[in-house]
Length: 302
Image (cartoon, rainbow, N blue to C red; front, side, top):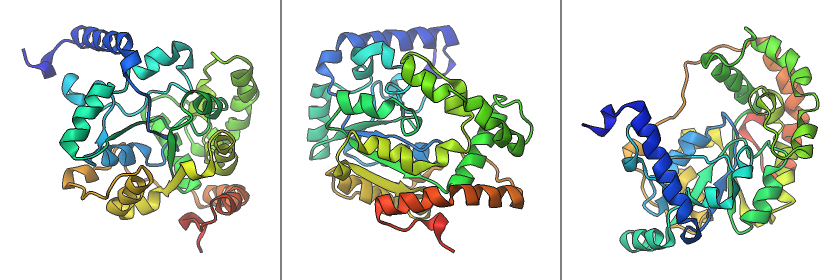
């Protein structure tokens, strides 16, 4: 029987066996060299898989070839929603030290491994947890025009039948009530997972500067590299070369297959009045972010 036609229970059982094997060998699996921490609907999936095309960036364990009809795993969501599973479970997602040595010999130089969980940037506890558990990791993030990000986030929830409110404007109006007290519950009860905080925070997740500052309290400033989604989509090669240099890797040409846009969706017009209100809301956050990064951002340009 072809792997692609295996029954779902068999596939699920196979995944369970692979994960258990990863956990039993967790001590032989070094943690991440980098974390891609966000932002949600900011291009992190496309960027991660494009970066995986670099010959010295290894995928997580298990590699896609071991899973039927699957892409490489991108995010583990350990430091946000799965922290209670422990470091053994987290390390089970990374290649062994021996596998890294073999890959390094084949690639002609040191390889790196990382994971991309876009909720990390916004989650109240993720930065503290990562700073404590993987203090030597480098931090990558890719940010998008927050107005477009918010609208894209809402549309994603609607496509997945996970947002009952039929208009973006209604969802924005409901956001404050939905999020009321959720930040405090997450910090007071570390095992608490909030769907509203992760998935219905359309406006709040684009207030990038305070979320990034929280991470900078736990990692040195030189450990961060912030990329802009609009620049990445305009020139994937330049963005990946920049990230590679940040990770201590040489530049490498991207194959055409690496330029795929993941999680794309048909465009849809945003009401001009809604766009204007969101732009006004984000203006001070964008200015703060530009000061923090000491750079101009394309969505702040006239």
